[in-house]
Length: 115
Length: 111
Image (cartoon, rainbow over all chains, first blue to last red; front, side, top):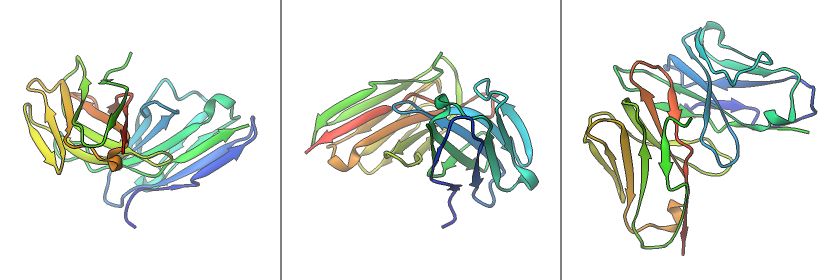
């Protein structure tokens, strides 16, 4: 399977714990995005990388959130001191930008439940 | 403020009927994508439109990009229960480098 891969698929954690999610993009894609989606809503942009550089972070991304993409390959999203409001589906997508067109392909997501 | 407004947000119709979903914005997009999402899964890309006025067909689905590249529509002919899902439009605003999503249209096709 050469699509975007996210791990784990599901994570249940206690409030106050730290969690880390991993995303492996499509290998030739140079751009990687993180989104958060709550029930009944469209995905909300969190941050994106062009190769290893983090180019934009949403105001939604508080200081408890950090994302990395070492060597421009896989990416991790860490949430420190989780809160119940962090419960959501965290989606990763990758794209190969050609001219003005961005086609993003998504992983299956990591569903986080904070209890 | 939602950059992309989708309507309707919910739609429930009978098998065999036709339907149209709309995606509107005041911003101009370099390109616009339509995705379909099943519960518990990530969105799956259906189509990308780039040129103003462009029309693309995918079996019973017809996608149109507005002439000014600010809006789009998805028309489904003879809907089937397998079309049930969350339909999302997403676009890359000119000058920006990220995809922004609409809030989605939850479509239910009843047998």
